Amino acid sequence: MVTITVNGMPPKTQPVDRKYFEDDVKAFEKTHPDIRIDAREGFMDPKTFSAKLAGGQLEDVYYVYFTDPAGLIQRRQGADIAPYLKDVPYLQDIKPEFMKVFTGPDGKVYGLPNGQYSMGLVYNRALFQKAGLDPDKPPATWDEVRSAAKKITALGNGTVGYADYSKNNQGGWHLTSWIYSMGGDVAVKDGATWKAAFNSDAGRKSLQMLHDMRFTDNSMGTRQLLEIADVQKMMGSGKLGMYMAGPDNIPTIVKQFERKYSEYGVAAMPGSATLGGGNGFMFNPKATPEKIKAGIAWVQWKYLNPDREEFNSKRASGDGVPMGLPLDRLFDGAAQEKNDAIHAKYANVPVENYAPFVERNGQLEQKVEPPNAQQIYTVLDGVMQSVLTKEDADIDRLLSDAEQKVDSILATVK
Image 1 (cartoon, rainbow, N blue to C red):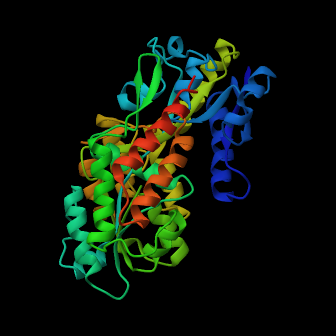
Image 2 (cartoon, rainbow, N blue to C red):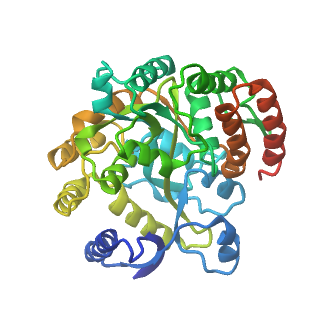
């Protein structure tokens, strides 16, 4: 008998998710009688992680975001799990780009993904129709976004064609997405060090497009310095055509503003690449081989298991959880096809509205956030704010000044 500590258990304030988790623990233990799960709330907190590890308080299996593994691997704060992966079901079906997140420079594997997202465009199908646009063929390039935004804005009555964030680090996050979509990078590794990379053609094109949509076309409205809640409210009011977001934004809008799922569509990110993120689990470097093997069994069974997808989908749809949104597409080939078929069977949202996202998203390069992302986003917030509030903003100067600040931030990456 081996007992493993795991985190990621939903809090009691999320009763449905909490019950699912507790039921799954019981079911897992019934089918794995030699393993016991000691589940705990919370995720990996960078501020307390090292102290918990040093003090022996870190869970055997701990939840991380895709931005965490590179640093944890470099600091040897995660266990190498490669020796225990030989017979793990469906491992070979996980998309290589997600396994790469948990692979070290030494080629060893230090964790497993359990969720992912990709940025795209959430849009109002009714406004597309009113503006003479085809809601089943949303924009695939930024020029098409700009053209569509102008037509939607021309409807009048306070309608805004396109909105974007520019504060509380969300502006920097979205500018990173813009730059990726234009074929650029925000940070690149130069030997052993990282350097800012956004003072580039892609950076200038992104900011020029935002500036022109804001001031030349007047298709972004006069109110700026927005964050996610502001833009979701605009979309929920029926007065916004499009904004950059993942498909998971749609349930929030529907629930908070009493809208219908049929009103919204989601498209893949315009351009050649998208910012993709996600989460997964890594393993305590002090854990025994028995605990690591038990932890891998738990993560695979609970999170990476097409064999349980029918049960999970039926359970969720029965409780009114939105099913059919293009989320957590972790697999390739037959495994993903199996999941997709099950999700379609139990769908309670209009999956056809998300076909443009599914069809194009797989063709885009999926790029993760830069190291020290939140600090970088603070700097890039200022760039977004200037471009969206000052008609005479000097884009070259903004990029140059931000580059110096971000280089200083990246110099601290270890």
